Image (cartoon, rainbow, N blue to C red; front, top):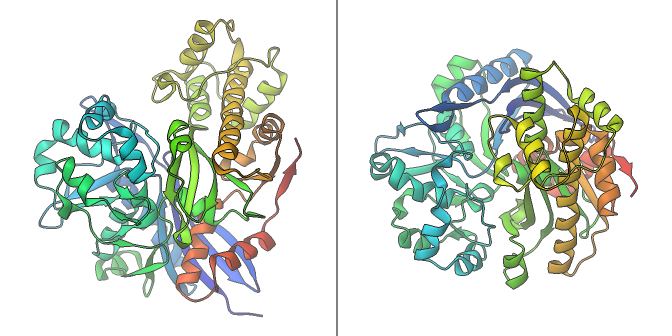
Length: 473
């Protein structure tokens, strides 16, 4: 029997979070979910926030459960959704609560920043697609919403770094997450300080960037005492959950696409260098940081957030349903042709998703979706049509032909979504593993600790440890 290697992967999504104990033994990875908890947005005073300290409490509950396992855990790492942050004052304290990226404070910020720097120039510097919630627009909005907080901020820490700071007392900025801010020079992989100063932001807020696989430090004594977990290193992995998901995707070739399916759908390819040209700007593709210093050339697509909210509203106003119930209703729906545009702003943060789906279909002359199944089909068709277009444009921009799509994440448990993705895109779909972000998080930790030779070797371990289901077009 070979040596057992243990680490902890914290994966915070925009809807829920979990902590997973990962074990490597005899070339096989095993996962044990020790703690899972909801992640609720909190609406206060007309704005939407994250319950940061509630999430940190859940993180520590996970550490206590890990300590109770009494196994030699080497390290832990945290990945979260992108763009959001907290601001730290001169005394090292958090000022205010992190604002949720779905908050409306960024309305109009794109146009305001476009007056300071032409948007095409901004894209050519940062390589990031224009989405209203990018950190650049949030920070510019701070000037109007919370100027006192911004004036007193000495450091910006993005969400995974905030949790890492609470655990270790050490501040750092991790590359893959920093790239989501739209304040990073895509070519140099460094902060674009000229851009930061043009926007009237304090350059001192932006700390030195570390790459995935950097060992940050040890748990603070008070954290060790409270949780009972000792001798564990905190590691910066692909702190943006998409980077961890891509690290955990067993891509079969350089021409394979990845599709990370969760609250958001992220569809793209791994490249050595960013693509910053007229076509990528026209189609609004993003060049996010990836592990091994590579680039995730991808499209952000409003994902299963829409389905999650349809289910929540149906449970509130009609009757209790599960996701398997929704799939059955969709398969049995009388009309299968309803379709929404997931990019429509009405689907970003509505109070009632059911009403918005019906209103959209009626306004577009499609008729009225009747029942849960027809509403669900409108979502399935909308998502998979975005997948089809995204693959088509990506092939045009990169000059590559996508050989297959490797789907990872919780969304692959929805067989109907996988079937429709293969059918609509015309590409073979490899679905698996479900726990893409957790696995990518874990193998980067193992590379950092010297237990695995490389990320590619880690992907091979993942391929040998978990089943992948094939869907033909």
